[in-house]
Amino acid sequence: MKNRESAPAPEDLSGATLQLIDILMHAIQVHSVAVDPADFAAFQAEMQKMRAVRTGTLENMLLTAARAQKALEEYNQRAVRVRRTHAEALETLLSAFTDTVTAISTASESTTTRLSELAKQILKVRTAQDEKALAIRLADCLESVRDQTMRQRERADQNLTQLRRDLETSAKAGPPAGVQPKMDALSGLPLRAPAEHALDNAIQSGGHGFVVAFVIDRVHLINARFGYSVGDQILTLFREHLAQHLKEGDRLFRWTGPVFLALLDRPNLAEGVRAEVKRMTTKKLETTVQIGSRFVLLPVSSSALVISLLEAESAAAVIEQVDAFVAGHSRG
Image (cartoon, rainbow, N blue to C red; front, side):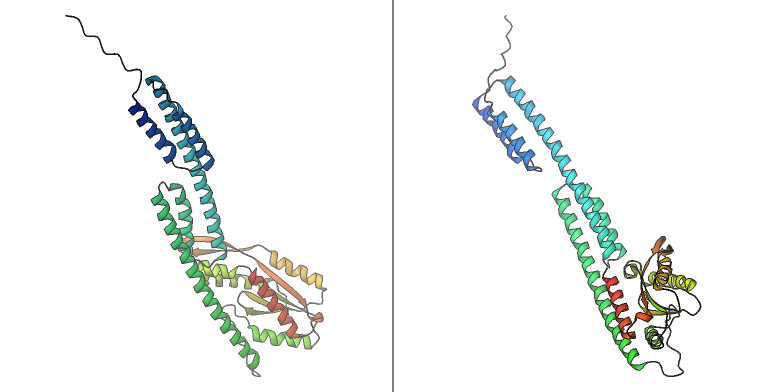
């Protein structure tokens, strides 16, 4: 009995098989994820060239399948790299945005911490669902920043309005004879009304001294981020710093907010007084404050305006200069 010979493997593929393979390659061509438009177009063109090879031998189709597999693998690797580069760029952008929000807004520390965490989570995004969830969390966080900023702005406007009313009332009333001026509870210094009175007397008597307005930098940001108790520590530290450098005969007042006004009894030229004040404002000051369970080292800096009383037209003109300086510094 003769052994049956094995049937030879078909060298040619049927038309139906070729059509099925073409459908699969077409699906790969058009349904791959387009991350970079130029790279995606090049990948589609490469797949189209492979589909154009219609030779139906098994060997040729296996070679084509291998090339298609390699092209798809390389394209996916490039797409992943591009996507990760975009994610890293977005993380950098959101981190910079978070730093900016922290510096200029009245958002709480917890809110800026949430923003920092969201920036780190960008690189962990893998699916469209992850992106959607991250976008929702980011929108909620930004809404919280807006709400906190608006509430802080409203409180600031209310405080400013009340402050103006109190100053107007104090200016009109003036201290009765023999009555000690009201002192600031925090600094222990006379307030703005007695400062204006002393300034007017100095100018009327032809004084040869100087008036200096000291403004502590960024106290409103410190109040917003760490609380008013920390801001009060900064004010107390700076008040002690001024007291250590003022001379006998100088007078110091709490003008308003983070502003101190000093009347300096100096026969010096203006250049000498400005140099003295510059040494006071450029000296390095810092303090450590406790925020919850951690300690934060805060630098304290200031700006100053020096006005010669001999050159002053009136107390009202000097007060206007000081208020303009304070307002401009606050906007900066």
